[in-house]
Length: 182
Length: 293
Image 1 (cartoon, rainbow over the protein chains, first blue to last red):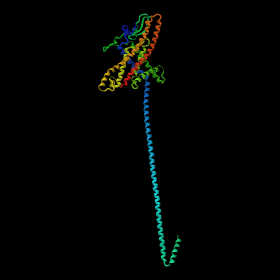
Image 2: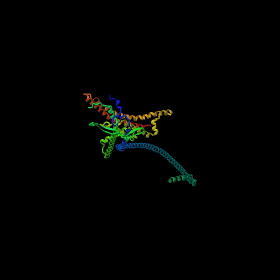
Image 3: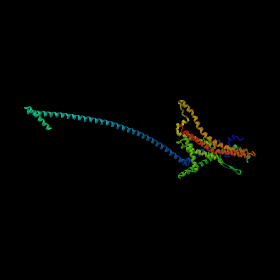
Image 4: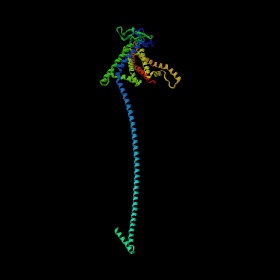
């Protein structure tokens, strides 16, 4: 029968035969390399670049865009952080300013109040002092007037001391003149 | 009606074997129509104790046909594509189909397995490999065709090329030290003399592993392409073996032809699958080298 064993027999009898499929022919190996390498370089130079050009360009573009997007994202993140930081800073500053203003206002008020109180006190004291001075002066004036009057009265008395009744009359006259004068 | 004894084994071997002859498989009168030539004496020489014969054989002719067809096809595709792009027309037709096919190989076989960075450098090689194997496989299915990829020499040459590509790419990518790591691996958790001894012991195993992979590539392609032809020829052989059964010959013929049709369809799938397998395994092995640490 025709068994598989027959397949392995090499048919050298045939005209032009080189060997069975299982023989390794060095010449054929070299031919394969030559054909493949020539084909490889020809295709690499004349065919593949034209076919894959667009795809490669698209890939490069996408790569570039991805890198760009990455960069922009980084930048946006950085600027967002910066903004946050600035905002927080500004808030802090504003708070500080308000607090400062408050303290200053408080101090100013305190100062004004103190000053007002002091002035009031001073005015009061001055008034009191003036009043006291006026009073003293008035009293002194009054006393001097009284002494003058007494002296005047006494001199009149001394001029006409002989007659008591006359004296009396003199004083009364004098007093009457005073009354006229006043 | 042929009634002579026919040695199907002989026919099988003759059909799949390389030869200085292209048989067109029919007769004019009694003379078979075939292109026949003889070994060129000047193309034979001996080197390093080996005998080389560079006379082109049937398989060389079919490789040249495959290469020419492939180059013309891809060159035309590139030209048409560039013209379509220059005219800013929507891509269409044959060129667009080929573009999609080429890009599928590039993106899904090469870049998917080697990586975004190193992939494009290896793409031309793997694309050439895929389409060359594919066209060679398909040529074998055509009438009067021969399958160059069904010859052990051809697949061995392709596998040796793959081996060199893989190992050299590893050497360039990883540097000499890094490449030696792939032969004498550093073993985590084993330091000192024990680690060195184990590392040295791994050497032969790793080298064997490196050689076995292209060996498998070689035999897988050869086996698949040859087996299909054997099956088809054997099924046809049934006609000649049992065709003299009176009353049943039509049934034998019909059954044989039906089976052959089925196997032929299968062979078309196999032609694509084997080209894909050869290309993707080469890509995977290169990718493993690229990502070795």
